[in-house]
Length: 311
Image (tube, rainbow, N blue to C red; front, side, top):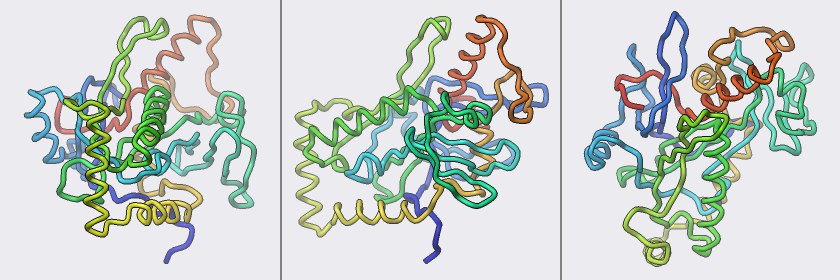
C-alpha cells in the first residue's frame, strides 16, 4: 500500500454549474443557472458530457436544476470534505490546508503544522488567495453504487448550506444518512453586494415528492434490506475514514492544473503578480467591486470548458 496517498471516494463523473470561456486570449469563468454532469474526459472542446446528463435533462424538460442523489456514507464529514486551501498559482501545487484552527503547510523543511486563523486573518492566505474549498461526493443512479459524482466548490454559501443539511439529515434520520433519498438543488439569491444580480449556490434536500417523515421511513426500509443482504455501512465509513487519513493532502499534482483554472483564477481584471505585489483597492468602490468579482467566481464550482452551451 502506498504511504502518504489519500484514498478518496471513487469518482465516475463531475457536477458543475459553470464553465470557462476564452475572451481576449484569457480563460474566464462564466456562470449558469443549471447543473451539468460531465465525464472525467476532456477533448479540444472541453469536458465531455456524461450520458446521465441527457437523461436527467429530458426528465427536467431542459433545465437541470435538481438531481436525485444519495450519499455514500453516514458520516457527514466523509461525504463533504471542506478546508481552507492555498494553491501555488504557477505550479498548481497545494501549499497549505487548514480548518480555521490548524493547518498543514509545505515548507523548505517539509510538511509543518501551524495555527490557522482563517484566510482573512492570515497574511500568507491573503496574499496567496487562500479560499474555502469543498468536495461533495454523491451517487446518481443505480449503475455503480460505490462510484460517485464529485461537486467541487469554493462558495461559502454552498459549503455552509451543504454542511448544515448533511448534519441535520444525519441527526433526524438516526444516523441513516446514506439511506436517505436526497436531491441536489440549485438555488439563487441576490444581495446588496451583488447589485441584485442573482448568485447561485447548491442545496441538499429531501427528494421531490417526499415528506421528511416518508423519507426517513424509506431510509429505515433501505437500511433493513442492506443489513439482510450483508451490507456493512459502518465498515464502509470506517474504511473511508482510514483511507482518507493516509494522505497529508487530498488533491494530487495531476489534478491541480484543472483546479487552478476552475477555482483559483485571478480576479477578471487583474493579471497574476508575485505575492505581496498585487493591486490593493484604493477606494470603497474598488473594494466593493473586487468583493463582487470574488464572490461571483466563488459561486462557480467545476467551471471548465465543455461542449454544451449550458452550465
